[in-house]
Image (cartoon, rainbow, N blue to C red; front, side):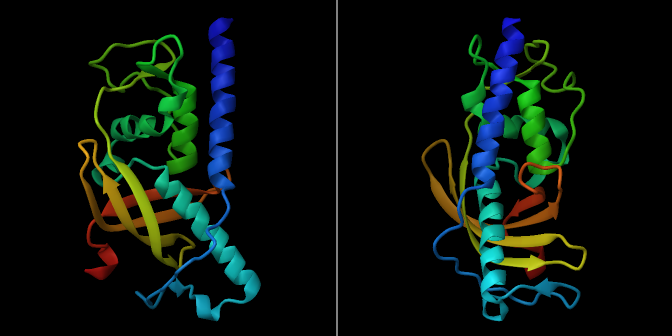
Length: 211
C-alpha cells in the first residue's frame, strides 16, 4: 500500500514537472535566422511571418528549447535503450525513491522517455543488469554528468513535417569545465507526448546539413 501511494505521488509530480516544461512561456526576444538548406524543406523566416504566425513560431521555438534544455541524451546515447534510460534519469533525480535514493520508479522513467523521445519501454529487466536490482525500479548509476544550455539559431520545417533545429549549446561538465558547440536536433510531432513532440536525435558538433 505504501509503495503504491509513493508511486502515485511520484507520477503526479513528474506529470506536473513535464507540464511546467511544456507550458513555459516563450522568451521575450527570439533571434531566428533561417538558411534555405534544401529545396524540399520549408524554411520559416521571421520576416515572412504574420503577427499570428510569429507568435506560433515563438511558442514552437520555446517548446523545442525547453525540451533540449531538459534533455541529457545526445549523440550515440540514442543508439541503445539502456543509454537513453541512464542519461534520462539525470533529469529525474528529484524524483528518486524516498526510501533508497539509488533507485527511481520505472513508471516515472518510462513516462518521461516516451514524452521526450517517443520510445516505449515495457521491460526494464535488461537495464543495468550487472547492478543491484529492485522490482519496479531503475538503479541509478553513480556518475558525473554534464549540463546543457541551448540557444536556438534556426528552425527548419522539413517536407515530411519534422523540424530540424540548430542551436548553440553551452556544456558545463561535472569537473567544472565549460565549452560551447553547435547542436543539430530533429523533432517529430507526437500528439500523445506531453510535449507534443519527440526528439529523434541530438548531435553535437558540425551539423549534417552543413557538410
